[in-house]
Length: 290
Image 1: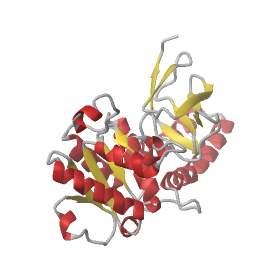
Image 2: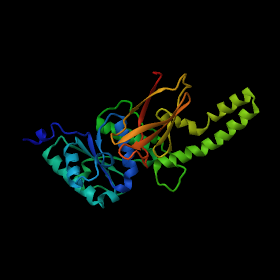
Image 3: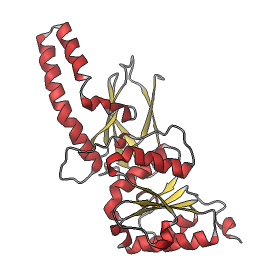
Image 4: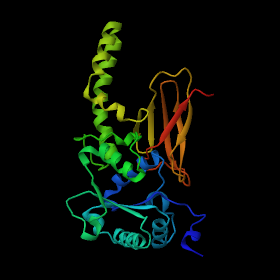
């Protein structure tokens, strides 16, 4: 039986995502934006099951992938697992010239000579929006319009907190603005003059914050890890029908509230029914179907 026959009925992947645990947030960002654009990556958080033999699962993941995507960094080259993944990828490349290797340089560490030939891009942390677009274009070969998840709103100088999570930095940056906007609107509404309210809203829309809003997919913002609040682009006549897309099999969605103005959902671990403790960007389709 040939190697191709071995995997004839097995799950196949567009690429294997190799990274250090210290760049986990960026790996998630790449993984979920890839899903959002129709790709099927192998990613440890989604594809490693409890109790499996890690070495065997990783080897199968690479063998079943069309490409190997390495997030190259000092921590990655210090990781025994990443080094093992790199070795397996090189072995497959020598056997299969159609197997692509893409190296994304994250820091000042230069790839070794044997890996420089595969260097595709240097990740620009000041332009993660542009970096993910370029990376997805490289993997898909598609130069068309890409869709980005809500986590793509990354500020150059985010309002920082202690979590170390990019999505939470962004959320706090936005909340800093929203708290003041809420006070402005509340005060104006309490006065009750329509012209003053209209003038206030028109000027609020000129804030620099709202120049970034088109980068948000469908008005989704994480209210907290695993909890999403989606503001509808226009007022719905009835609570909309909701269809969830791009959610990995290990998770499930729970509707907390759904009305004409906003929808709030929570992502749960399908097995434990507990809210997950990290952001999972997803695609949500709304319609007026009953």
